[in-house]
Structure formats: C-alpha cells, structure tokens
Image (cartoon, rainbow, N blue to C red; front, side):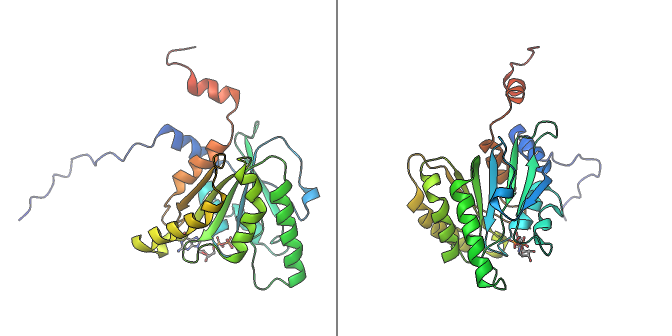
Length: 247
Ligand code: GDP
C-alpha cells in the first residue's frame, strides 16, 4: 500500500512567472473603453500605436479580448444592438500616460446583415486597414477548425501591402483550439502557415499561434507579443534597464 504523504509538506512551488509576462499581463488588464465610432472620420486622431482586432463574426474575438483584458464585459460593448457595426477603441497602459489603443473592429461575414450594410462595412474595414495612421499591429482571429475562409483571405489582402513592408505587424490566433486534438491542431497550424507564407518577406513580422480563451492556451504569448509591439515610455525603459543598485 503506498504511503500517504504527510499533511505538513509544502506544495511544490508554482512555476515562476517571468517578469516580462507579468508586465504584459498587467498591461493587457489595464484596457478600458475609450470611444466608439461608426465611421472612420469619427475615430479620434492620436499619437499612440493602435492595435486592431479583426475576425469573422463568431470566431471568438470578443472572448479573446475579454480574456486578455481579464474583464468579462469589455468587448461585449461591440455586441450590444446598434454597436455591432462600430469600431470600439480601448485605451491600454497607465491612465495618466496610455501606451496604446486597441481597436475592436466589427466581426465580418455575419449572415443576417443585409448585403448593402456588408458592402459598406467591407469598405470601412478596407480603408481602416489600408490607411489608418498609427496602425501598428493586427490580431486576426480565425477559427482553428475552419482555417482561413475567403473573407479572411480578403482581409489579408487589405492589410497585405503594409504587412509585407513591416509597417504593420500581424498575429493570427487560431481560436477555440481546445476543440481540436493535438494532431488536428498541428494540421490547422500548418494550413494557416501555408496561407501566410504568401505575405512573408524579410521585413514582415508575422506570428501565428493556436489559442483557446477557454483553456487560456497561448494567452501569455499573445499578451507578450502585443506588449512587445508597443514602444515603452522612456521612464519604463529607464527603470527596466537600470543596473541594480543604481539610483
Ligand atoms: P465573436 O463574434 O468573434 O466576438 O465571438 P465570441 O467571442 O462571441 O465567441 C463566439 C462563440 O464561441 C461563443 O459561443 C463563445 O463562447 C465561443 N468561444 C469563444 N472562445 C472560445 C474558446 O476558446 N473555446 C471554445 N470552446 N469556445 C469559445
């Protein structure tokens, strides 16, 4: 009969979280609603890097944003009636000195939207992705089970020219990865990588990861990647790089 372990033994220490991950998590958790706009010219101009979240309706975009921000309702503003076709902006970083904006773009491909509204929104998305000043990175949510659909590829075409030059970085999340087994997950990654290969080049910064909000799979990697896209304030770099013991 196996011996029972004595009750006073300490539990094994949880793996230490690296400081860069802690910092990236805290940064993501600071996200708060800023404003909403139904037209591009209603979006405020600003000097902060902007990171856009895009994906087919139902791909898991709101859940991913809420999980990253550790807030249950943040991105569900974009689901309330009348706001589904708006661009919602969130501010991220210290309140007194935000370091970035997140832009939650309307989910595309929603079957119940009438054709004229769809076309109008395709145009808004195309304009936003091709011309939005300060757009630093795009996070595209693609259902891991379905891979890139024609609409997803069309969106890649809108953003492609700026990704190829490295002006805009791209991170693809293959969402709901918990619904796939290991082999299917690897296959989904491979198929998506083949599509993204068309955009690759020396200057391009393209990432891809299996992601599950439900299982928190890939969550820290995503927070770290997004955080790395945002230039640090001179003050935070000074703190991070100061030799220990320096004043
Ligand atoms: P959106 O339309 O892209 O914002 O998608 P939602 O975030 O509303 O998610 C659509 C559906 O997928 C909802 O029923 C979610 O509960 C579900 N979902 C989202 N993320 C995950 C995930 O990581 N795993 C699983 N199994 N379901 C998810």
